[in-house]
Length: 180
Image (tube, rainbow, N blue to C red; front, side):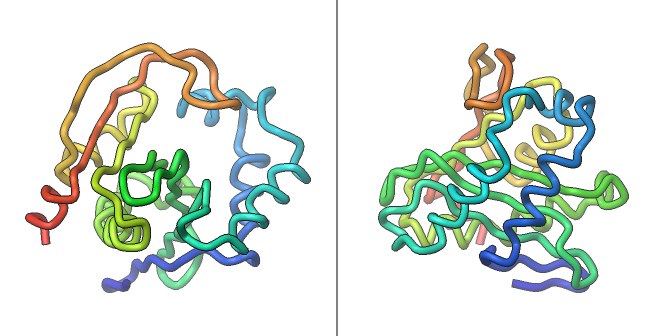
């Protein structure tokens, strides 16, 4: 999907180095601001193999699925889902890679384009997003798009995050259809 100078496409194996570069080249302070702990990142080769494996699996078997966000024809970020329960729900993550692309409204438009990929490709009833409560940009974007705030709670979201307060946001298939 495309609009003016932004577009969304499925990630390919060729995009894996870009995704890894984002994780392994970001400053520890930036990673901490979004709830990640640089010391907990898996070895780069293991992360590569995990992502590579996902490209060969049918949708019903994928554990992770990513879309690439482009600004002015150049890859500028990604959104992915994991904890995928095909036909039911998945957890979504949002990442703009370059500080120059942040705070310009790109994330809002890119997320809107991305939702149809997730709901249709995985026949989802619900999308969940749980950003670090202190990371304000994704929380604001989710609210603007129409996600419902469910609750704030403390957890360790995944293997490479620290314990933190997250905000749980949900968007149902019915809400998504009404947005169209």
